[in-house]
Image 1 (cartoon, rainbow over the protein chains, first blue to last red):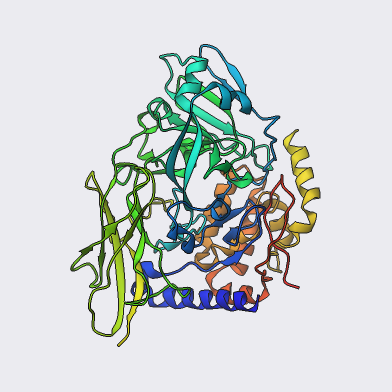
Image 2 (cartoon, chains in turn red, orange; image 1 turned 90 degrees about the vertical axis):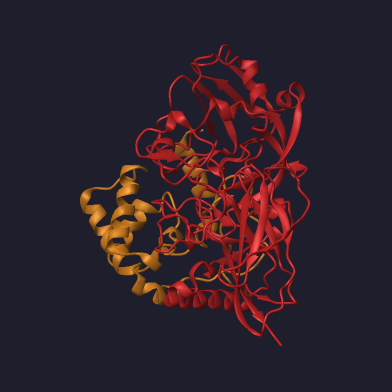
Length: 397
Length: 124
């Protein structure tokens, strides 16, 4: 406990120093938070907020390609999180654009539809928001508002086919069991364009890494939208509505949007693109160094130099590291590929460098030619931070 | 169950845990801040922004809570709350608050399943 407090203090001090020296610390700045095991079924995570619970995954868990369930990040918009039993659970599929409204139990979902798996990264749109300079209001996430898991469930397209989707369908909306304490607060409802909803990789998942979904990751059923940010991955989903017009609630029309000039780059959401801002959709190409010591730095030759890369499913083409502030880049070796939506591990050899202090930068590029950027693209809500990951390195004689 | 009953159940189930949440800074406006804001979220949402908690920031956030999240507050309430946040959660106050915020331990804490509010016990 004493050590924990000291580490927290050290974190606060280093954050203060980082803020003081500004651009030098730059994107290497860490966000100071407590690491606590406070949630049922979860190991010690970085706590951002108690209520609603928002906890992020410490970086060391990303040394594994699949993020353990007990370390998987937790993110809720609203504080009322009811417990739903698997027996009592029902999924309602209705709306103006279905032929036959249906209600399915969890057992019916498991028995009556083909069960499939996909490995996919679930990443919050605001992951790394706390690293933006100047700061942006919102949850001050570090690097861990994400995780990669093997999701098992049924295809949303198969379930929608059972209800019979009319050709007039424009969007599919998803509501869940959680709610805000106040009646007036907009319920967290998100929609997908029909094209993404019918994509064969879009699932209603009941398992994660071979186990039932953890309570805090959406038990008993959550939407899995590979390639798109976690805002669409509705947890505890219990109502699916096929719409003949665009969903207009706050979470679609105001939140989770970016200036059109920024993102998305490929995967668009045309029925929501009114006004100057478009919805956040695809996960931006990104990478992370994961082999740092507990102080967040690396020692050349002694530490391993490895990490992960990911994108929206277009496929990672290469990961490169630089030791000279981006003047030259060295290609890294990519590891086992668990599929286009998964983290892909990478490693690199240390170059021969004179003793001293350096920074290693990592960047990934995908097969569509998208490359990480040196500085995150500023946007009002601090989404899609995909600047190079920068980590201090010591070269000792 | 209605949302109101859920809220009551939540408060009853976690009255013990709720005490482990950080407490709002003492000072003028604290009671109104608690009354208008803390039914929906813990005060760490505020602490998280103190590093850059200018008056403009707090005004924009209080406005967002009223307009988008429908937090019930009058114009007078909003002004008192913005004053409170600016005074006690501005960048200059970060050091003071860090000393008064209860720290938590690394401990495997069992929280009853169901309505989750998070939270670890205070250090013994």
